[in-house]
Length: 101
Image (cartoon, rainbow, N blue to C red; front, top):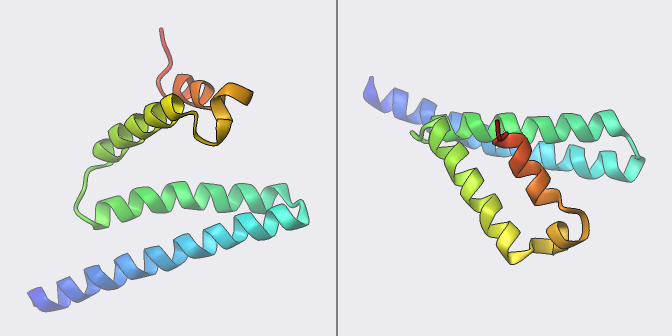
């Protein structure tokens, strides 16, 4: 019985990874077509699938959240793709995710 559960778990992980590739395709296809709804659907799918994959891999949602915030801070310091100096995107996202009260 344990072997069946392991196989089911591995299958679910692989299916989630495939769905992530599909979501990336939706984003790309939507951007080529100028289809906002399609792009948003792909982006939302990537976010949701990331959380689901995190769980299936035996990790906590909160650990993903903490890692995301750490990565965003690192990207801000590196000025990754000049998103911070040109548009302030990383600061804006960080303030959205962790609002100061």
